[in-house]
Length: 359
Image (cartoon, rainbow, N blue to C red; front, side):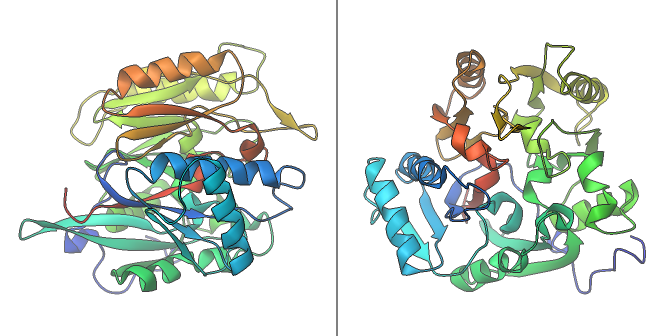
């Protein structure tokens, strides 16, 4: 690590035996930050809340759902949306009063890590810095504080890092393999000195990464500089889905082809080549003349359920069929996300899994 990425004091999570588990490992809960920012969703906020209600209604029968709502009025809006989606908001759902600016819990929430201690799994949280993806938008301080609120609620150990890093910028298999993009993790807008070597050390120290696969760039419309959770996702050890674009005239064609080339040459932490399954690119979706980063790869794996973003195009059925074949232990639930993605993210971007303390 360079002087520009200050050395962390004290023992790192990896040195204490912690690692980042796979998303398909059993959860205790899913964390959300309830949407409320009219600048993110200026004309569709009510529809976005309805979609969040649907997310909760699908997840809550299988695991706890923890929601940051800020105040009484926002809690009541959340309750109405959850109830309208067919779930009792008093059943397996908790509401918390910490404030947020926006709803991207994948990026501003903690990243949970686990270790085995005397036959029992212990959970801790990692608190990277969050600054609205390289300070693109003002007002990130409330969101950057979310992991500290979660620490107080859960009473879990918290490992703080001075490094800016978002959860949507990394993808892992729970066995030491991490996939990321150069365009995001090495971007100087997140801070100076972000070389491959420096960031691989951060991932090793805080998440237990043993091998990092570096992709190139993200899709058009992604204001995060290329988050990997719109591009490539693990569905099992050694198996990934990768978004593919068949249209050479689409600006996404070239970067996705380059990412696939790199995946084909990659190995995981155990030295195995990756099995790559193509996932179709949704049709172009625009909001006020700007392309939204619609991607079927932005799904979320809960306990026995997979929430799949769909957008009303021909790719929906293909993506659903592909994931149902690859995830036989999950019920794949397609959820329309056109309004949500107009804010430049979808289901994975707004969820953060908390592992169960025992496997």
